[in-house]
Amino acid sequence: MNYENSLDFARQLDQNDSLRHFRDRFHIPQRDGVPLTYLCGNSLGLQPKTAREALEQELITWQNLGVEGWFDKTEGADQPWLGYHTTCKEALSQIVGAEPSEVCPMNALTVNLHLLLASFYSPGVDSPGVDSPTQKKYKILTIKGDFPSDQYALETHVRHHGLKPAETIIEVAPRADDGLIHTTDIQHAIAEHADSLALIWMSGVNYYTGQVYNMAVIAETAQRHCIPIGFDLAHAIGNVPLRLHDWGVDFATWCSYKYLNGGPGAISGVFVHEKHHQQNLPRLAGWWGYREDRRFEMTPGFLPAPGADGWQVSTPNILALALHRAAISITAEAGIVALRQKSEQLTGFLEYVLTPFDAIQILTPDDPNQRGCQLSLLVRKNGKALFNYLTEQGIIGDWREPDCIRLAPTPLYNTFEEVWRVGEALRKFL
Ligand SMILES: *Cc1c(COP(=O)(O)O)cnc(C)c1O
Image (tube, rainbow, N blue to C red; front, top):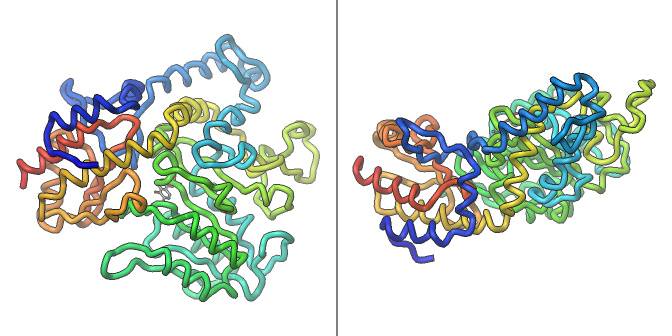
């Protein structure tokens, strides 16, 4: 697309945007009665206007029915609390490219990662079906500088098995010249360590640079070497199209408070590929992952519910699920393909309005296939002052020490005019 740096041009793009009415579905934060230019959906997505009503509905059920709310429903509700999670499956499976049985909302991202590592990383234990880690196969391949929570989870699992992180975790590093992770470097690392690798775990989108990894190709390489692979989709879900089932990804987890707008600390979810559903994988179980038809028999001996549901542990937070359901239904309604199409234009426009400023170096790849909504700006001189100025001007991004500003125009509620305003603010400051 040929861009033009003018207000008229930006407004024209907004006029032609078939998704523009979705902005009205969200509360846009204001300052002194003026809507903020909110470019922080990569950190905390905005509140859908349906969130309050969804929450209210379950508060009414609780108020009127008490414990019976698990089996009964009040007027206006379509689902008792028991089985409530199943009402999220259609939208979730569409968003991540999965079968409904392969996904289940539950817990929080890092908690889910621990549960999934218990199933997919157990060095020394033989388990049929997965190419299970043996004495020889015990290493984990990951990305250097991935999100700290993931690093802590991997490190502590390794220690839990009596292994040493330094000898067990292999990190693929970004290249020195462009600061990016190259797919071929990951493929080479997989091939080189194939004999000792028990697991590959990495993010799908880098939280810092905004780089989108080629998950399809990496998953294909992993399968070729019979190494289970899982993805952290915190920055990928609701941001870029995913085809977890077709790609043959073994497992994944995500958070839903970023691009999925589920609210602060919103409920996470897991994906477990169908190919593992019939296997009795090791797991850290709880009663909510027990077969639903027999859960209340309260008998000893864990029998997992079929599919991803069998990874549930505890009674779900229904209020969080209600918010989650309201939020993902908006993403599913807009459709990830249409969202992605607008997103490429929005972010392309942001890149375009940033081009004239030599003080700003964009860390995110310029290839649209290697990025999502977010652009990460490296501002070596006066970065913090620039960030503060943008905030004063009502432009909300986020700051990563020591010199990085992340801006994420999201296709559900941001406009081209807002992106144009970023360029104007920069011109005044620089
Ligand atoms: C945001 C984010 C998390 C957050 O994990 P929580 O368990 O939800 O706190 C994890 N990993 C990545 C890559 C993230 O971007």
